[in-house]
Image (cartoon, rainbow, N blue to C red):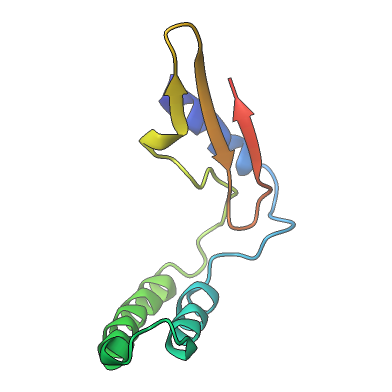
Amino acid sequence: MLGRSLARIHQIGALRAFQVRPGISVQRLGWDARAQVLASELLPQALRERYSSVSGALLERVSEAFAAAAGTREIRLHGDCHLGIFCGTSTARCSWTWMIAPRGYACRTCG
């Protein structure tokens, strides 16, 4: 049942292009985020050089993976799927699912 529901969500998401949210990009979610961390006073000075080195190397690899996947069709998809989104009681069963995609609308469903 869960697999079918997730499949339907993905099929519906593939019907239309994204309209609102920005897409997943290495620049925005990687390099820009890294720059914010490095500029922040929350990162201890003792960790700054190591964080810069490790995160830079990691983002180089992620950039290569994104380049290799260039031209892949993007779809709107269910962006949050983990055990914590399912809850229930002995009398009622409720599955709360946040429909969050990088370029989709966020909405909560219970069913």
